[in-house]
Length: 211
Image (cartoon, rainbow, N blue to C red; front, top):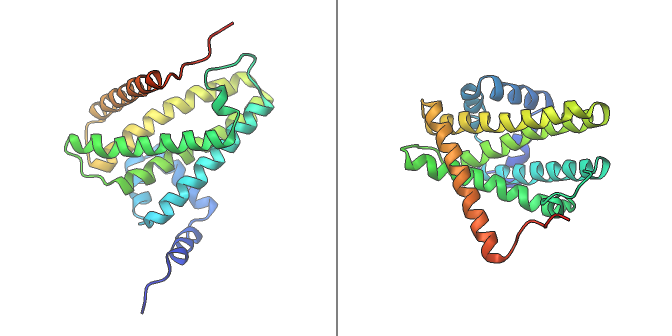
């Protein structure tokens, strides 16, 4: 028999995942990252599905951030205000962030003897964004009820990001030293930030000056 069209194969994979399954997998990838990553990669999602998932997740995350910016505006203008004020800019920025994380997970890991692929790194980066989207949803709800708790959730999301990135990178490449992976993660992010600052400086893009 011939192969199913790509669209039908993707829909078949998506239909196999119910909301409850996604929540359970999100919990498992946080509480038991190595086992959760194995389950996630074991789904063998086609590459098309991974790209579609990235588009869906970054779009939802951008809309959530945009609505939060409208409902709960900051009292002072921030350097990233031009980005958060536009859903399209948010989508582009978050998509670039996911691709940077996936690329860094792949290539930096391989430099140190890792064996992970970009397709798997992309899926893990998208999954991290999905888990953080759930945290973002809770944070928006808390902002309407108890703003101080919402601030705490922001710090929690940052810690969770580094936690997942470290564990996911280790699981992707088969590394056993989480401390070594964490140091590599910090070094890569610092290097990426320096390169970005240098490029923006060349382009003449600087944060708005304070009054």
